[in-house]
Each structure stands twice: as C-alpha cells, then as structure tokens.
Length: 162
Length: 115
Length: 88
Image (cartoon, one colour):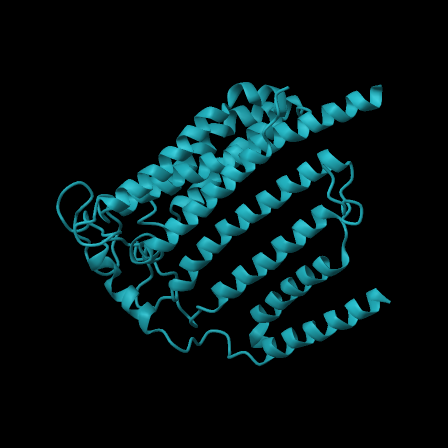
C-alpha cells in the first residue's frame, strides 16, 4: 500500500507515543475507572494500525517485528493461566491477594471514595496479562493481512505485465 | 410504544443483517452482514439491564444517592464483542485466501472443489 | 421465482421481530435483580475493587474470561496458519 503525504507522517510521529501511553493508562487503572484489559488492548492496537496506514507496508515492516508480537501474546496468556493457578489452595480462580496486606492488598473504604491504586488483589495482574495478549494479537492480525494483500497485488501486477 | 425505542433499533440492525445475508453475493458484503447481526445482539444485551434514573456501576467518585445499573449484562457483552472481532478477522482472511486461489470473490463462481 | 420466495420468508420473519419488539416489557424496569444487588453490595468488601464490572469479569466469573482468551488465541493461530507461504 502506498504511503501518505508529509503532513500525515509528521502528525503520526508526534501522536503515536501518546496513543500507546493512553492505552497503557486504561489497562493499568482497570480496577478503578471504566476500562480494563480488553478495552486498553484495543486502543494500543489502533496505534499500530495508524503506523501501518501512514507509512505504507514496506517501511512499517522494518519497524514492527512479528516474532516479538508472537512472543508477547504467548507470554500474556501464560501469565493469565499461572496467576489463575496460584490460588489453588481454596479454589481455581481465587483472589488470594485481596484484603491481605501484601502486594496489592489494601482494604477499600466502603461507599463512594476516590480510588486507591493499591487495592483489588489479583485484578491488576490479570488486566495486564489480558491487555498484553489482546494488543499483541490484534497487531499480528493487522500486520499479516497487510502483508498478504501486498503479496497478492504484486503477483497480479506481475501476471498483468506478462 | 415510543418508550420501546431501543428495541426497535435492535430489530432494525438484525433485519438489515438478515437481508444482507439472504440477498447479496459478494463475500465481503456477507462479512459485513454477519458483523451487523452480532452488533445488534450486543446492543440488545446491554439494553436489558437498565434502571430508570441510575448511574454507571463504579464507586470511584460516583454521584451520591442514586442507584446503579445492573452490571452483569455489561460483563457478558465484553466477551461477546471480542468473539465478534475474532469471527470477523477469520472470515475476512478466508475471503482473501479464496481470492488468491480462484481469482474471483462472488459466491456463484467458487462452487467446485478444486485441488 | 426464488427471489419471491425469499422475499416472502424475509417479510414473515421481520414481522415476528416487530411484534415481539412492540410487546416487550417497558424499557428501564428490570424484573429480577437479586444477583446484581448482591454484586453491587459486596464487590468492594470481597474483591476489593471500585469497578464492579471488572470484578465480575475477572473475579466472580473468571472462567468465562479464560474461555474467551482461549478463543482469541486459537483464532490468531488459525490466521497465522492461513497466511503461511509454501517455500519452494
């Protein structure tokens, strides 16, 4: 696919980092504000789609490596299953860190309160795992489809020229 | 009857989706039709859990003294949206592979099983 | 001829949808809400999260989220297998 004009490239250079940071903010604050793993992962994947559209497929392929995305997606799903197995003392998905005083375990003031980041046990870890899987997965889908479309167009042009 | 307006929107979505699935022959249009039906069903799920005069079910700096909307249909709709994305991605990749192999994308012309 | 039969079938099906949408219960008055009242009351003390929807998705009904993550992973494996090029 062709690359776009110079204004689009300059704006993409400026705004690409902000979209990724905003996506990670939505993932990390999933237990306090609306959001969570799936929503934040979709926002980060849209940053990769923006890079692919504005720079064309040939140049974006040097910047985004498919093997790293594949590794990140597998790490995300493995972390989700390992965190689920860690609470097996009581039951399978047990929230063993909530209200306990260690790593994410403050008590929550009941009722309406400004949120405390240090609460909610296993939930932030699961949010990060699912967010990693979703953004790596959607990035793989977008990159593979662009690569396949380019390959088919080149084959068609080669056949038409003959 | 004007109070039931969300349900009328849902049946317009599903009606358009069923019309596209019955009467169109291009593979990309069929993918759009399947996506429309799934979006209509997601909208129906979250309109089932509404209470009059209630706010979102989140305790961080919520306005005080009001009841909350039912949170369970929203949680189930999240799963359904992700499965819809996965289905649409798979059906569009299969359409690309069919075009590469057969040269056309109409449903009439890709009937025979070739090698 | 086939188009006329399809058209009549579509009109019959759509009339079923219209009749059921008009006779639904009024919008905004849920009938049964005991499970959701329990979730709204006890999500802050048991799961420790301010966001009730996230605590349902990952704590009370975490098994559905496991199934959904597996479906997404399997779809991506299928797409990678479709786009593989045969090296000659």
